[in-house]
Image 1 (spheres, rainbow, N blue to C red):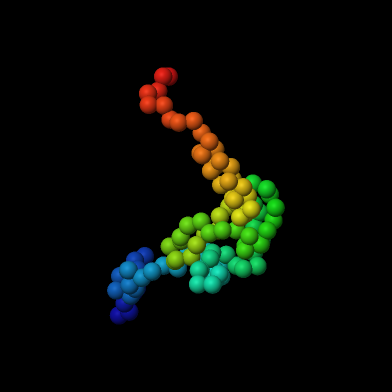
Image 2 (cartoon, rainbow, N blue to C red):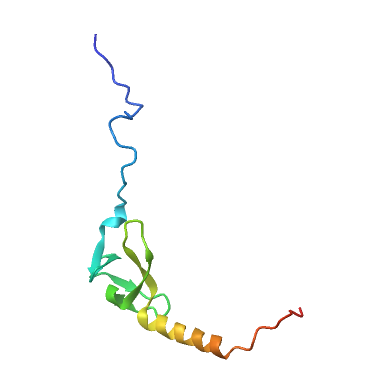
Length: 103
């Protein structure tokens, strides 16, 4: 008598359940010194504010990914520094916050 395999169920003893899953987009990384950056080194990216297409080296890092690589910021370093300079000036020269709101 031939034993039929049930193809609808997966064998729970065949695979480890706590195995770290690899994501499709986690393979594309490059390094800046010791820092792991998401994306390839030769990739071009469009800045969100000035709309220039620049290489990946023109962008600062933003946050960590699950595999330890850093995401790139949406704005290039030049635009980011201009916006930071303007916001620091506004914060420095803003009037003091009122104690009670009269609205």
